[in-house]
Length: 221
Ligand code: AMP
Image (cartoon, rainbow, N blue to C red; front, top):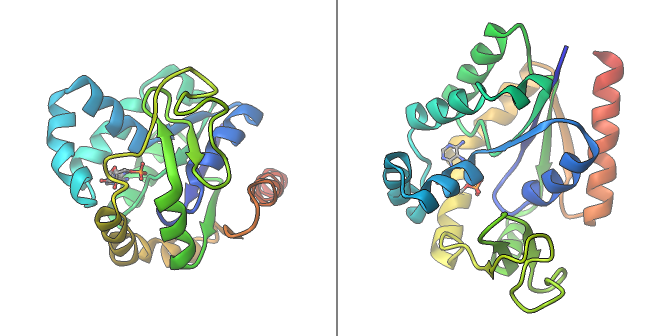
C-alpha cells in the first residue's frame, strides 16, 4: 500500500519548507496545489486565468476547479508510489473529495501532519518570505537568504516576493484559513488522523517531529 500524507496548517507556517526537505527523504510525489496554480499562472492557461483573481485576493480558488486540478495530477504515474499533499485539502468539500479519490484507488490518508503557530509568527514569516520564481524554493529575508543576491541556490532562478505575499493579502489568507480551513482540524481529529506539531520551533526541530510522526504512522499502518 502506498503512503499518503497531508501537510496541513496555516499560510506561512512552513509547510513548503518542510515539504522540500521531506521530498528528498521520502519517495513520495510532492503535490502542492499552490505550486500547481502558480505553474498554470506562469503558462497563462485558462485554469491559471481563472485562478488568478482568487489567488491575488488571497481567496480560495473554487472547490470544483481545485479538486479537478488535483484529480488530473493524480493521474500522473509518480503519484502511485504515494503522495505528500501540501496545501490541499483546504475545505471540508476538498477533504471529502480526496478521501473518495483515494478510496477509488484502494488507498487512504495515512496521517495528517498539522503544523500550527500563533498568528503573529505567521504574519512575520509571510512578511519575510521570498520564493524562487522558477522552482518555488522558499527563502527568508531574516533567516535564510540565497547565497547570491536574489539568485536561487537550487536552480539559479530569480528569487522574488510572491505577488500574493503583500500585507493585505497575507492578512486575508490567514482570515480565510481561520474561516474555511480550520474546521478540518476537527474533521481529521474525529477520524483519528491528526498529529499536531508546533511550527514556531526551529526548521530542524519541526522536521524531526514530522519524521517521527511519519515513522509512527508507518508502524501502526
Ligand atoms: P499556497 O501556495 O498554498 O499559499 O497557495 C496560494 C494560493 O493558491 C492560495 O491563497 C489560494 O488562492 C490558492 N490555493 C492553493 N491551494 C488551494 C486549495 N486547496 N483550495 C483553494 N485554493 C487554493
